[in-house]
Length: 364
Image (cartoon, rainbow, N blue to C red; front, side, top):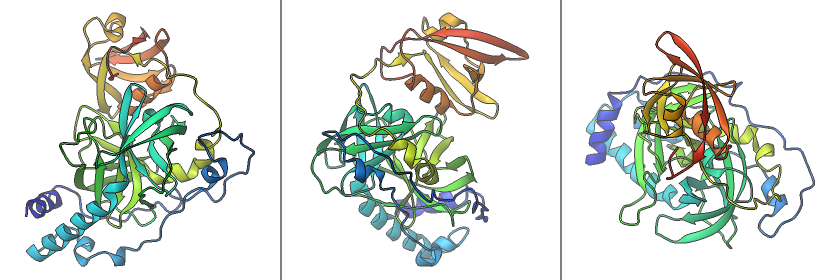
């Protein structure tokens, strides 16, 4: 009954269901341009060019309790609890912890031959070695395939022989604010002593460029899947901030629309993992940019004059809308490079130069 209790609590904390008019923005890419790709030992180019398709699903297929704005009886709660337990057990085998270089995150397998969706800032450049860990502790090897840092989409592939457990792909054509969802991942990294972490919540924001839920996600969850109540992947965890109330996900439509870019250079090999750049600051999402919540003493940010409470609005001329944007752009840089920041401090607008250093840890 613990899950039933959490269902009842969550139902009172989210807005009522409302129709979302995203028919034009949640379209699927209708075709992928054919191209010749160099064969490599670890990539089957033809397989990678096959864009996954969403599995059809209808709201009427769900239990009646999910059609209500809030559960109205104990029977509703029990029905939802049974459904969620069965759903979590069905999709969990496809959720993996990933290690890439000195970083880690989560991912979800979407094909029997081992294609893995993740976040772009977890994936990085093509050809990097990846170690995948399954919920039961078993491991597999793989490679990064491609990433789009602008929308934080990433694609990897398991290179060990399958077949592999995998989840179905979904869409957001019928999604509404208030829909129930499941977030899975490995907050804090993989831990065999605990089961895969499952969080139940609801969609609280649904826009062409923003998918937000009240499913609490934390560092280590990046790249993990967001499932609808049909068990289809509808998003990938992206923005992890110091506030557990700010939970953003990359909509699955971004993967469909950008598939050609993700598989553009499947034969490209990454010669060596780059050292991770370190800025020495952490932040949280703010309506006007990224608000710094911590600045390491003697770190690059502190040396540049940044302070807790500063609002970062631009980095190298690019507008900052999410803390995840800083993390993505850091993934593209190397120690020794300099970032030009536009910062608001009270009524003042400052321009500061931050020279990045080699990361002493896995953090930013």
